[in-house]
Image (cartoon, rainbow, N blue to C red; front, side, top):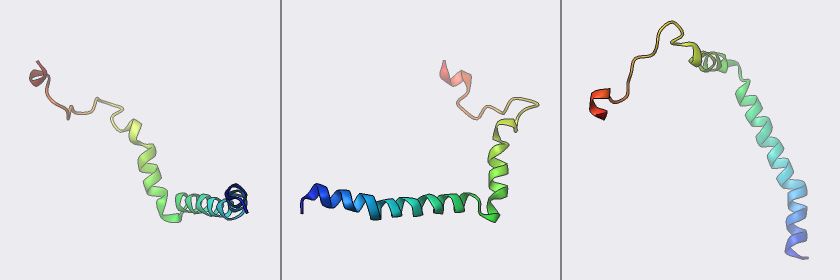
Length: 65
């Protein structure tokens, strides 16, 4: 049996099964019951400093001159 044929049969069966299981694992992990707070926190990041700009945490303008 050629290497290509063996690799092709593996990819058609076991690799496909492994990728489907990984996909299902990621979907289940993303929609698990305890992750609602994490997703709500991440969804609110763009709006945290909506009323005023965030404090500058980078180097000061004086140091850049």
